[in-house]
Length: 526
Image 1 (cartoon, rainbow, N blue to C red):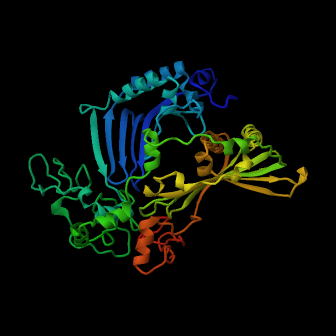
Image 2 (cartoon, helix red, strand yellow):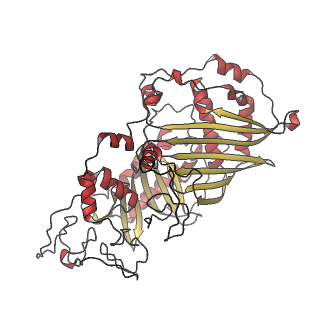
Image 3 (cartoon, rainbow, N blue to C red):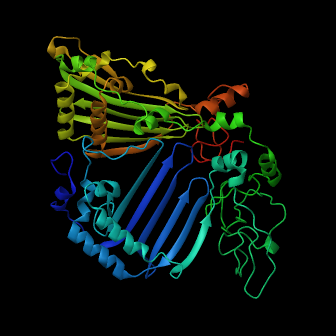
């Protein structure tokens, strides 16, 4: 790791990074909007499979499933990229960081996106070196990225296509939501073209022609003449009628993820849901209106930015003396209109004996939370404590957010908050043993301290990125039953509580599920 806080492209090119032989490379991108299940990703991987060089393209849409296409490639392509990697020292590009004070790129508020390139080698623990394309382009590395993309993309043509397949979405929550709210987005059924021809038969599910066996070569659906009658579960291992996978034991096929046929939604139930018109009031209650109006207006120059005021300057100029720093925490949460829109992101650092134990807690909706623990580096700990003391940040606890200064605040469809909690042991400084301070992020920004909150957020990221991971786990969410505004209205309309009663999953044993499906394995409630 470089000593410089924000290494540039010039800095990382001078680093020495041990690495082995390049075996594969991929370029990937991902975007995620404000709506639940709005993620879209693309991944192009150049690799060797069964003695043949290929490019695998995986296009995943949270609502529509995954499309996979396999293209012919050659070893010379990887050799070209390996040469570029050596000349440009790409193995160190992952160390680049953007100084937030120099980041003048337009800010986007209603969605998130990222793009990256990963180099896979044969001698490193974990086997890969990855870097962010946006960061590299910021420092002038766009030409190298475009060259790698061109090499991989040169094989993505119809002439090189070997095979393709579509993997339908299997998440029961998505299926239920599509059937109820977005019937027009469900994949249309092609006409039954199952008559045998000299070139094989046509699939009545996806319309693909030319299949010769009992199952469609494109989607795995059984040949119409092979479709069984009413499917009955005997309690033994079962064969999936969708993809032909044998030996299934659970409620989902281990080959394609489809429901066990006796548990799948009945066609008449789907038709009933599709024929029910979505009332405007219901649609608004479920999904809300575009959010982030205030931020969007500010970004467009239609709403004045908050400027530093005298109160903030006076607080920063007032000397604040404290003893030993005990803990530092950033906690952010948001709650939208849609079901399971509640999210939390909390970073907590506890200081002891010159070091710090950092815990990162991330929760989305009512699903299990991801918890990762780190041992923070001494450098970032010292810089964080120095920043808090030099800026007299504990004085900012006196700031209060004034909603009357934000006339568009009530027009957004989300609620949320962000705050920093700082604790000192002031016994050595002649004060109480523990002195606790809570800083409201919105209040600081409103008084013109956006640079301060940005730097604090950067320290939170550095406590994790510059630390060493000691453990990683998933655990039940701390805030159960936070289903979003629509979820709460639905619970009230059904005469129940917001969270509902908890039940034990008979499939995996998870004890804290609160909806129709298990929060751990996705099995339906019996």
